[in-house]
Image (cartoon, rainbow, N blue to C red):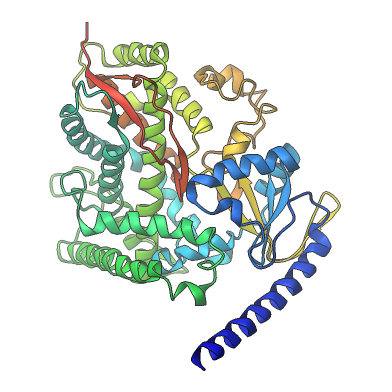
Length: 502
């Protein structure tokens, strides 16, 4: 009897879901059929080719090959339009009205709330304006001591792996980047490189994994069904750790500012203090009122997430490219020799990083081939007209950055690593402004891109001053996967040797 009742309930539920799917599919397909794309299956849409994180990039490249750079997809009942040619990229990324993030970003809400990454509308505009001064060069200059102290630990850790044939560099870089962003955003040390098994470090990794899994799961993308999964339990457990830590730091910092009366930027010795992002938030006002603690926590958590995962990916793949191209690595060393002028072991300073022009080209070319965020999304909150077609309200409008960066129409010989593409004379007149978008573009470009570039330069240059990087034998082939950021499923391996300077 129970089995019969369960069967009936299952059939009724399936029928209801099928009717809902059919209703929304017909409603959206009325407009979206004008775009090419694969035929969706009932309930799951086109989600099957994207069943795991490592299948996302190959599946997207295959879709582009079949249907062109602009096409439509369905994930369950969720309609998506992918944009990747010059016309569509300019349309989307230059828009001041299509600025709402796609529904996938909702999966961050319990963690990041409505911080700068996920918020929209008036709140986003006000907080973007409030936080922009935090990335002024005079503020960024103050983080050189953080770069120096954290990379010193990184060098010590890597020194224990000298002459090993296949060192996976990513775990070392990820922990270093986590130390950097924690100290610069919150003014506190979590010692991720020394305590890699800490609950906080594990919780950050767990949340990043869960978010991307939900985005391509026909079951987990529905909040009601997601709450019955094991990932939901893991999310709640991780959030307790993350939020308790952030709020603890915020309360401690507020107490310090109040008790020691350090509201100004000068200490007792007349020396300018280093302001963390948290300090700036605590000192700032929106609409004439102090920012509530919960909003401060959301912004701090956003910096912690967005500021360590993306730079980890960027640094790792830059090192990978250098290990596979010895002649380019030598050009970077020649530049560093000119900058450090025999004082090879002195600490990093802001002026040094500004002088690393060739290294910057190397980093930009690595970001082209391996963009840390390979896919971004917006959502149409109203019907949108594009190219004499209507994109209906609620449609997700996405940019497959990985595909854009490897488009031969934008970058001749796109699979070859060529830093000279980014010499100033090569980019001023020939570069499509929306063809190179590792930090997105337009209104919602990455607010922290200057900080990120400084951190990448500081870390890569410090490693190269101490070590020679070589490809493995045979060369390690990365298996790219999308886990909120671009990673390699089989690590990013290379050989490390102590650098002998002349």
